[in-house]
Image 1 (cartoon, rainbow, N blue to C red):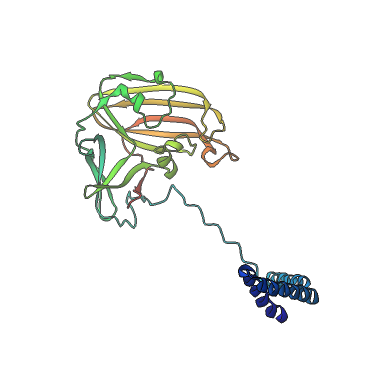
Image 2 (cartoon, one colour; image 1 turned 90 degrees about the vertical axis):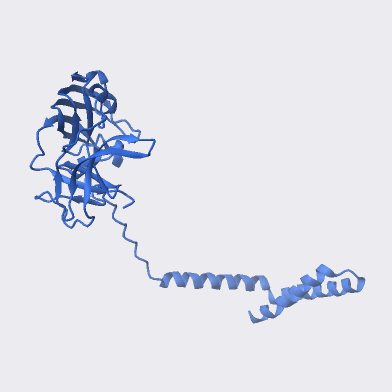
Length: 312
């Protein structure tokens, strides 16, 4: 191989010389040099030398691979639980343990002021510095929609035929929210929901998850200016897939709601589950029944869930 290193400069010289040779004398010298090159190539058999060098290099690489330790396969990161990300749940005393967000207001939003780009709301309670929760809605809601608009603004989208709704005093002013906003220093920092399931209290606020079959309930806040009622009873069969592959099933939805003037509460319960373990994640469960009923107070088994806004 050392001989090869001595010959390489000669080849480089020949290449350069060939590029610039123009006179007969220079051409003669070049022809002589080329003959010398051919003679050297034959005597040294450079082609075999190069093959031998290639084989040696391949063997070195194989030896390296054989001696290299096998790298362990990295453990896959545990997928984040969306139901508990940035979420506090109250304890048996209706208090957030380890609360570190300071005092905050609980508010009920009723309209969006596009001119001033802000949400209009009234205060209905507070989260204290120690995480304890107070609820005492007393303010009137100044902007309401007629009760019969509910068929076009129902957050749960579980009645397929709008003619299924029946109203009593359908022109009564009405506003329903299945959550409260949490405000601090004039900025929304999160939302508060009340129910007995972290999954249900998020699913029923998330458009793509509304039809999931996780059982449990969520409470909604309602304000009306006159006594009124909503009733509906629908048995429906059809496709409730999110991923494009049809999932056919039967569902039952019942609304039995009576409201007194002022503040009211609605309990929306998911009852029964269709399971599809081999379907994509967004299609693995579907509800069998939704039952919406009026409730006079917050049930004893209810939990308060605070979910922090992404920017906080």
